[in-house]
Length: 409
Image (tube, rainbow, N blue to C red):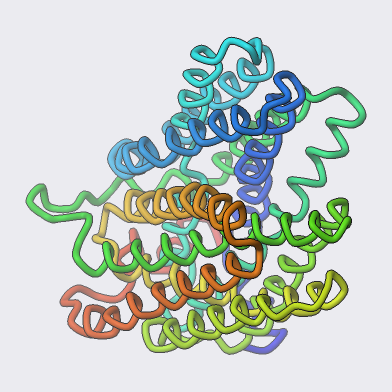
């Protein structure tokens, strides 16, 4: 897809507004974890306790996310997104006020705040098939995954800036505010009213075998990401460059941004064919980090390793849209999001253990092996996708032309 093709995709009715507002609404996902760590570690001096509270938040989101997705499919996206966003904001504000020494209370509040995380990304991605025809859909998923990287660059920076200026509790409040403002703006668009018209047959399995395979692949891939982040921090710290850890991870995200932009110009409907190759490339890039001679070289290698991240995620999101049952698309994407959360939490925990006992270089190799396992899992998707009996793009609430007409285009 050329630059004009990009403009065509982003110029489809509703796409720019949904993309922009959803990125603001997704900021809590990129801010809350670091904001929790900042407040709890500052208040208790314990990174272990900070990690436990963060894990409670993540587990709450992973467990309840698919339930909220199912409600959005049945009741409509707008009421579920608004109600969850209000509850999530209240939970994050409460988390900024709970005494950090009250372990039981702060763990419970964190779990409830995570459980109320609105299914913003799942809701928006479930709408792309209704707004863009199949030939351009994978490109739009690639653009979506690429732009989401911006939240993981901007979010931690906002936490650092707000925390320095207003205190360690302020980033949690700001995170909730960003989420609420972004969600309210998002649901103000007319296309958000769509999505409750169709329901899957009551005997249909939302978690079909191919969707489970896809969730397994992305869980392993994000596990690799979570483990690698710990390794990067440890590698920098061991070389008296702990202050550069954030910059290193930022360069990694920059590589993903560039890779997503380049891949988006070539995205096709062959996600199941190209995904295993992308994941193998990801594994190779992570394994190369084990031979890094120093911090300066790590910048370059992380940038290269990041090039295939957004393309891989774009393929996965596109496949999720095609594998989802009509009328259950938000729930399907919510299950994918839960896989991401489980992978991130498991990867961080596993990475900490590996780094503690074997060092950061072994952690880099372990991340490569997890990515390789994701590639092996993704290989089986080719057969599953080829054998689908319903039309590609289960998320079609309406053909793009009908959606455009509904929007007055």
